[in-house]
Length: 601
Image (cartoon, rainbow, N blue to C red; front, side):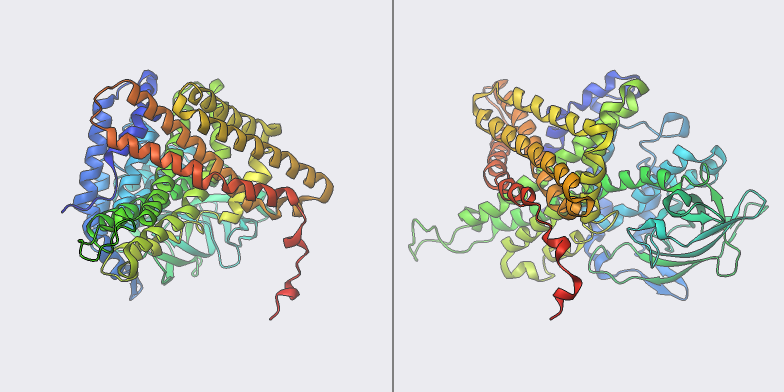
């Protein structure tokens, strides 16, 4: 039986029934596309995933990268994957036509990323990093840099990376010590160390191109002194041949999960012969990098949702085929055992997974639509969607990451003891999922970003726009009798979130920033639950419209499942905001007052 790791039906439901992707073709930028081409792209993404990515999903985990004689050896399939993704235009798909891209809407491109990562998360990272690094050069670098480096990354011949983290500078990028000294020939001499660099070196690409943060000599202190550079593993000599650029892999980290992709430590410029080329203007590196970081944070949300989705379908398949026990209403030992999916507690765990993964994917698609509107609209009409994207990015990163782990855990639980063993994929999904609350900014960083920056930006304008989005959904849902109760629940939760937000800013005035931000992660959690409830209400509206417009609906079970998952989220998950609100309103500063010494023994 074919393995199922995504639902094409659910993807199309979100694309066409919830987010009206076809309407994007009314904008000039996307006018050459249509529903037929969108469907073809999705179908091809599924086929590529089934034929190329999923078959090596377990093997890449069992045979992780190794550093052998100074070279990082990865699974041989990575070379084919990069080649096929480059040749098929999957890496360059979002690029404009003039740069040999296809101007694919982000809704479609991110749906494809979701499919790829669900099939094999580690494998999907390689081309994904190439696309992100190339886009950064396109946005801020010169045409010469783009032609020299980005084109090779888009072809899948060269690997792209983000090189930010250092041994003493993780989340605190102001403390990086990698230096860049002008050499007077259009390049800088780079020297330092970088750690935790995904796909930072491997033997399945001809070259590795790092988008690296460093400080130019005599630069301002802190983040204002950080610049961005292109630093290749191999540079081109006068004849166009690749020669060493004094970038050495010092080690490969051995990881809990996500084992198919190497995370490496780099030694840069040990021989004082590493050249880097400035991207954009000096001292703007962090500003530039945050474009890629924000894209990467949405990408983390996609990856987390993908893994949890694949785990959901694995547990669903097991629950349908595994027979164990009998109905509590008919405890007759002589009757045949029933499939475990007939047990209420198994249904609860499956509903939890369905509510989390389909709600998370909906939020990712919501953000993708905002990016598409930012891309397609005139500059003077983009602000609304820029602000909405800003405030939702930490949520779209953290909710799928944190809840994805819980979802995968419930999926593993459905397997019972078998889920703890490597005969089934549940344990690998569980290990793979754990990276997402950590990389590209921990959940704690996302909480401080949301409460400390995004909520307050432009005097709270982003939050006002978010509230308006929810109010529009509540108003529309109120027109359907079956949704009225859920519309009221969301409105109450929205109002409570607003009340909590105002109270926290009063705490800021009275007690200062430290107490204000002490429970920022809990605020992020509450915000995330409300945001996913909004997404489920939007899906509920689409379900009601579909059922209204068809008396003999062939998708009746699909829509019934959607409605049940929405009911689950509003009945089981949304009430959690009550306790979170109570904790946040208290603002007693316990975690600030607790001393390090008090944790002794």
